[in-house]
Amino acid sequence: MAVQVSFDDLKVGDEIPVRSKVVKREAVKAYADASGDQNPIHQDESFAKMVGLPGIIAHGMFTMAHLSSTLTSWLGDPAALRAIDVQFRAVVEMDETIEAGGKIADLDPETRTAKLDVWVRLERAGVTEYPIKNSTAEVRLG
Amino acid sequence: MPLNTQLIGKTYDEIEFTVERDRVNQFADAIGEQDPVFRDPEAARAAGYPDQVAPPTFITVIQLMTSGQVVLDQDLGLDYSRVVHGEQSYRYERPLVVGDSIKATPRLASIEAKKSNEFLTIEAEVHDAKTGELVVTARSTLISRGTGGAKWPSR
Image 1 (tube, chains in turn green, yellow):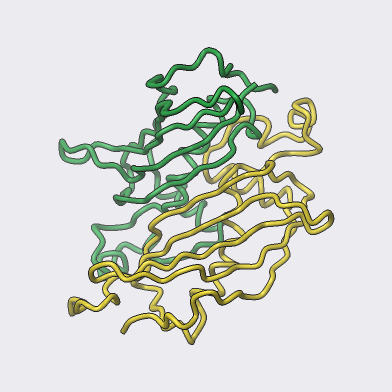
Image 2: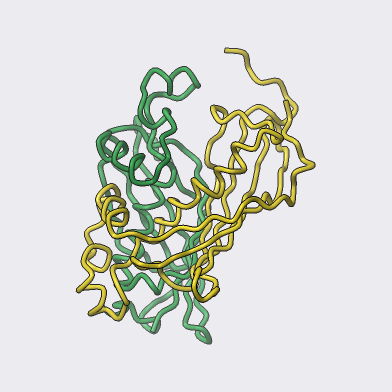
């Protein structure tokens, strides 16, 4: 599989296809086992509440994995993803729908590298929250 | 109680890790990754890789062993129940593939107090254990809630 995005087709301000996903408790449990991060805030409702959280929350890295998957699926080749730099700014609760997206922020024709502003957002009680914001990715294209 | 800032700059034990197919499959399942390059060695070879590719955030698996040493350092005084993940960055030289042996040495790069919280940044360069080449540079910032000077609310 080759890179399916051409540098020459990109313009600053272009958005990549948004991908959404419903966060299920079983998937977060599977992520705890796969990653090795068994912090009970991701599995135990009463523990999560005891430490001041609204309930079980997804791992930040679980949410970041959805963002990186959105990027590599757009790119068509994982080697084109050069860097990803995220800030975790809001929790993700079980059964919420997260949406990952990105927008071209800067283009360097010399290295055929694009910088993107990237995010993960969700709607909660009529308000848009950003579990990942003020974040960037760098991709190198053919 | 504030964290022990005397530990800034400390390096921890080098860890070694082999990227195994079962673990990559388990990780790809957990994140719902469907792209064949991350699931199927033949598809990955057709795309020019030596074997099945690990998803970009798979590197978090070794961070439990790198950052884990810092978090559990008794001299640091960190209470893990107060910790949340604040920031994460990865810079890739190439994707990890099944069969890679990698090694990494974590370093406590900084501890900064901001309001009532403290921010710990841990860096690790991940190298190919056979060739020594740099594969990924990882930087994690953990937030220790309520240890930065202002009183931690009683509960």
